[in-house]
Amino acid sequence: MSRLIMTASALALSVALSSCTAKPAADEKAAVEAAAVDHSAEIAEATAFVERAENELAAMNKEAAQAYWNQETNITDETDAIAAEAGAKATKLAVDLANESKRFNVDVLPYDAARKIRILRSSITIPAPSREGAAEELSTITTGLSSTYGKGKFEYKGQMINLDEASTIIETSRDPAELKAVWEGWRTVSPAMKDDYARMVSLANEGAQELGYSSLDRMWLSNYDMPPEEMEKEVQRLWGQVEPLYQELHCYTRWKLNAAYGDEVQPKTGPIRADLLGNMWAQQWSSIYDIVKPDTPSPSYDLTERLNERGYTPVKMVETGEAFFTSLGFAPLPETFWERSMITRPEGKEVVCHASAWDLDDADDVRIKMCTEINSEDFYTVHHELGHNFYQRAYKDQPFLYKNGAHDGFHEAIGDFIGLSITPEYLEQIGLITADEKPGPDADTALLMQTALDKIAFLPFAITVDGWRWDVLNGKTTPEDYNEAWWALRLKNQGIVPPAPRPADAFDPGAKYHIPGNTPYLRYFLSYVMQFQFHKAACEQAGWDGPLHRCSIYDNKEVGERFNEMLEAGMSQPWPDTLEKFTGTREMDGSAIIEYFDPLMTYLKEQNEGQTCGW
Image 1: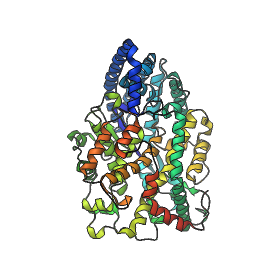
Image 2: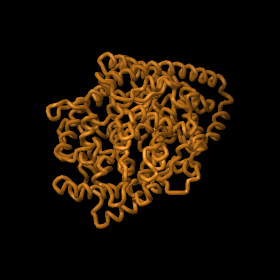
Image 3: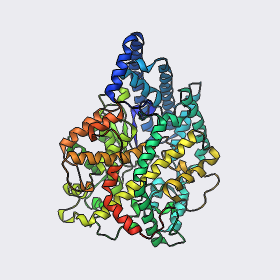
Image 4: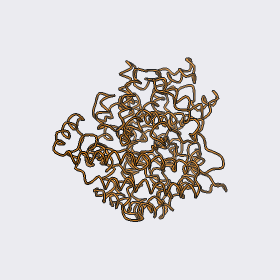
């Protein structure tokens, strides 16, 4: 997943919720209102504190958001220093307020005050200790890690190439020697991060412990309206629902890679070589569709070719994404979006090209930051990033501490839920294909394979990133074992291995943006489950009676109205309440994924008959 959300409120406070066990909102409100009767003085003081905290955080985060935007869109020593200073101030303020809030007993406070204080205490992504100089040191480290990643280059064939250029080779080359060289080359950028990363972990754990958590991983896992231990079990439950589909996809893909490259490059059994999968991190495999495509009819068009044939530009791609949301009844993006967004890589500047969506003032100054290229991947990415922006605008009237997704998986799921409606029917509606080119039911296996190579291949990677990081944060994995533990998990969950033994100084986790960028990754796993859950609910609302993978909600304003109601709630209530509002259920559920890909699962099992699956 190469995408990210950046909101002003998320810079010091990440998407997070109460660490208490989830309850129905009505029961929770009744309990706290009843308990509040005899605590009027504390209630008044706490209410005043929350109002002051929200005002101070709102002002600080506008300043920090602009500093980070400037740094990521123009990396220089000066912008690095300004971002580090702003980050230190924002973190220090958030930690100070979280510590100050400890004097209040949330069990006797009114609902809003209690919920906001819980958010305040648990939602700092990288908390600094309150001792003198700690926030400044931590901010300098985190800014430096981001800068190192953003400026990363390595020499290949006598030229220095960046991540964009390296990724293109990984996606398009079918020369295993070249793939190995480029894959290894990008990972020469990250060893320099290792010591700073270890120091950051130590500081952040000290900060988390000061706030009452045993380690930072417990703090992160407290953000889902249930105890951390229950959330870990919830992740395993959801993964258990979809793992059989991944196992079949892995088995089929390995067989096809073996046929393409031979036993010396990719054996018929065991794990898959990571550099052969068409993605720098082997997290999504759609770039090798030409190798693994099924022996069934395929669509007659290539979306990347069609976008170029139709004269699409990066701006037109963004305009097309916006038009999907306005077709549902959402207001168009403000003019400032078009004036201030970074839609393409600017010449003469070092930038962080990692696609992200930003909200710089918690109101209307929404933007995206992308180095957009005219291809199918970025066509989907545009819809994803705009999902963040329309979510941000939907909850802009909420109080500051509620200006976020119901939990972080919601924010990531919204745009990808819309992306599931990029069906042949939708492409015909917007003129990218003609009625004669629209594939029939016999092409469904091919269409589902293309989607599975992105969506299903990603799931075990998503639980691996934070699975590794949780063990780092709680001390189970020490710095000397960082890389070994990373590949042990990647083998266990994904069934992949590096193309050759890794050097002793390797720090391969740092070659993935979300590690030096300190972006919790569980949100992406949850979003990949929930986007299908949202899609099924929306298609049922629309009265769709065909296969789930053929449904598009484009131009359905009735669905759009219910969708917007869910988004407007922001973080104001426990996430099961918000989920129920749109889907009718209070639990995250992977069954919609199984239904969506059922025809493909049947095909994969048939193709894998006689193969030795697993690794």
